[in-house]
Image 1: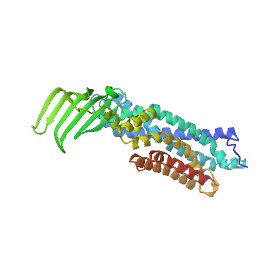
Image 2 (image 1 turned 180 degrees about the horizontal axis):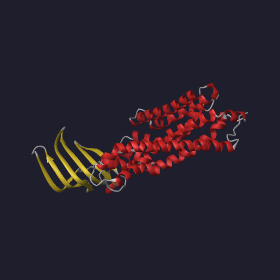
Image 3 (image 1 turned 180 degrees about the vertical axis):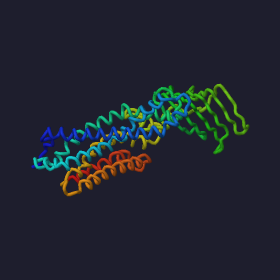
Image 4 (image 1 turned 135 degrees about the horizontal axis):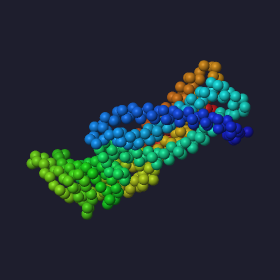
Length: 361
């Protein structure tokens, strides 16, 4: 008869969960701090090179970047935390004692996987409430060469749009619908493939089916001269949503906003492969924490005196990192449309869930 009681001893469950969570969080904090220091060293020169930037801007960068690094390191840290926990339990013969008391491998793993499920929920909430906003603001600030950017209200940066034969680059796009505002617009007017004029505008806003450009500088290739104007009407028939839908970054939008943008893209006839893959990956990525105890479980079983604990831990680590490689590869294929978005986001998770369960059995 199959024993479905996965928590026969709450004291042992609390003990193993405490070991797992405490060690994983210690690894997460250490890894995130090291990555943050290395990243800050590489970017601090660019930040301080802008006139007016100082220590406050460095802390601002840390505030944007550190949540991203925590999100990035989260599943890696719990893989390493699980390996440390299982290796310690094995070396101290605690796994042998638990099995001698009647616990099966699944009963030993169940508390850790239950804790991982809770942690996956916390990771999802952290990504939705903190990371996406920081990613959006940091992307806009970075694309603006760490110069001041408008307050965050759905910022998009470095957006390119094709308008007939012409090309349009918008440095900063904010707002939605008729409230769209562009800061730093460059219009390349072309005759076939030859650029005839380059129009630079300080700001642009939609007016009566066109765009009113302000603070305009026009380079005319035929005249070889630069003309200045206070304002100019251009881009007739270019809808504001062309700019808001031209660059949909799943990492910089929460689940609800991304879902709404996918619907708008479908109605506008814009390809949604990247956005849909990113939407499903927002769910599958946090759940990868659930796999970590299962993939690391190889380090828990087998006699410590056999001398193969380190080898089993290395195999568990290799399986965990193989999952991340396969997951990134599948998402890349989903982004270019080679895989259906649902398959690209969930296939690696289900594959390694089966692999881990097979190895455990």
